[in-house]
Length: 264
Image (cartoon, rainbow, N blue to C red; front, side, top):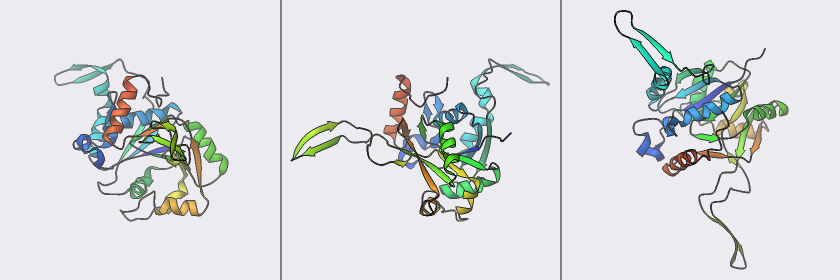
């Protein structure tokens, strides 16, 4: 039986546009509803059966290490027997994350996205692998995404999304506003929403330079060779790029409108 593809998540950026929140923790550890956005992303993949993760650490990676090393201690009730033979009993253990496998890879504080993936490549041992950023959530159907990737037999797939505009949209005719939409979803064209699928041989496109940026030369080359397909996603997608995004995601969670929460 073929094991599910590894899920690589880029967690090393400095999040400079969120410096108020990232001074003491990396952006993937900023919380939505009391849980890191990284946890929300991992829950999405695990919901579809992809729970073998490779996390590319960098800026303040020790915070992410501590989180997973102490995952059980902080999430459950404990009974600690003190003394020479100290024991710890975990109560109310939940089954939801039992099968997660998390590999934490130090990829350097100043490395760029492509170099982080190259450094983590020694832990990518499946014919295909999934990749995303540690700061964006969506209700992408990962199972359908992978099926789409397998169907076209190309080397890579990127999920194309239509995010909401930050500004009101005006439709003008003869100098008059004939339609006004407050922060509508972009209706023409797609942007890179992450949630990639690659054949493992794509790793050969990554140079050994620390400045190798995934979104530049590697993906540009792949597209020019006709080897990069787009999986269109017209559902919910939202990144946490600014403090405004951070507040929005928490508001959506607290008001029951977290459309990315597809797990039970």
